[in-house]
Length: 293
Image 1 (spheres, rainbow, N blue to C red):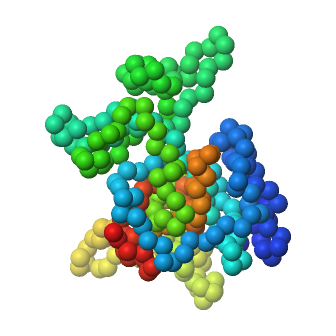
Image 2 (image 1 turned 60 degrees about the vertical axis):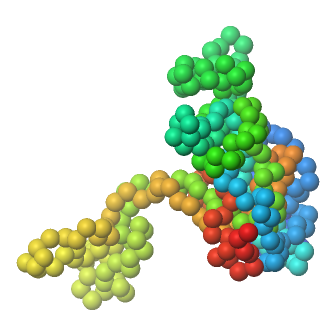
Image 3 (image 1 turned 90 degrees about the vertical axis):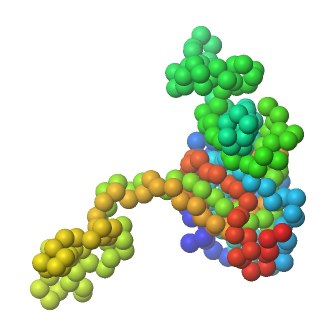
């Protein structure tokens, strides 16, 4: 079912979602810190991205933004189409430094995301326990609150012009109808068998004709004396999940600049709370109705 376990996740569009995106955020441990999500009531009708949307050339940059997966819900287009979306709290990311070709042999922007909570009275700051002095010393020198996530994003040397320490990268870099690539770490499933991990059918279907206690086994894994070994990359039981995955050419349905929320059509890798990287799609021309500028 589209919409998953959230209110109104199924049924006629007239039922709509009995709540707002703030309900989704509250379910995820207050990732949005209880801020009001004005203008994003899920019962409102949002315009679906048009197929003839064209990306503006000045918006195609190699900059990306980091965000946190909040959860899934659904919105309705003007034609009544139900659109499953994933809510992502994208940024704000603070620029804490740059890398130049002259000094570092490559060009990049160093950003920080997800500030630590302020310590309670009489207690040591959390960052002093989980970060080294060199890490949080950078923020102390800049007069900024230390952040949990510190990453670098590769950019073209020309994009470093005008970038200053302390600048904010927000969700405004995207708009409805844009195509993006989203990268994240998938859910972990531990040690899994071939039926769950590789979708094999097992043996003895339909569970008869002499198959005993091997219904979920994989069967033979090799040949005879020649080649006398098992080939590499054989699909076998093993650890499943916790791998980096990128979903390409996803449509941005809507952007809430006030709360730094991006609604992206479809599912994204990882569990709720997973760190995601959102960047402009590199294969925008592969999707009908879009062209690379």
